[in-house]
Length: 139
Image (cartoon, rainbow, N blue to C red; front, side, top):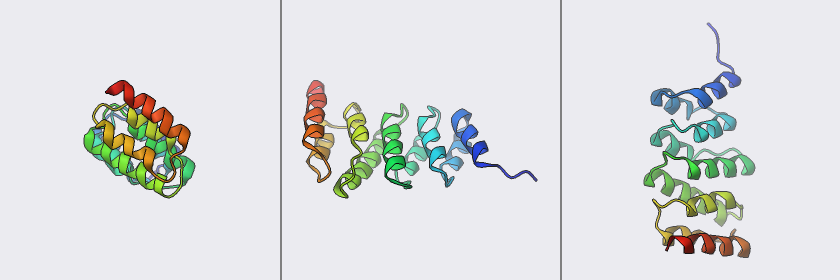
């Protein structure tokens, strides 16, 4: 019996189209596989939502949240889960700014629910400024 390697999981996460396989891959312990799933346009919303709670380290978490916020198949439920994860990171003093700005571009979310991210502890004045500029275009 051949045991799959991390590289095998990564290749599947990049190329797979079957939602059942992609859903199973979301339970994989490798953050690079999570990121590949978040970049795969065929990853189903249920897997994306599961990935919104995956944690590894600051850099990997922030990249994953940005990719999830940008995912073309992310529905409002997924986007709100990402928003909540981003809010928690900001409250902890982390800076998932790319994910905040990606969420600001998502029309599925109300302007006010995204604007609130700029009021949290980890939000810088520059982030608030850029966030307000991007959201003002949507009004």
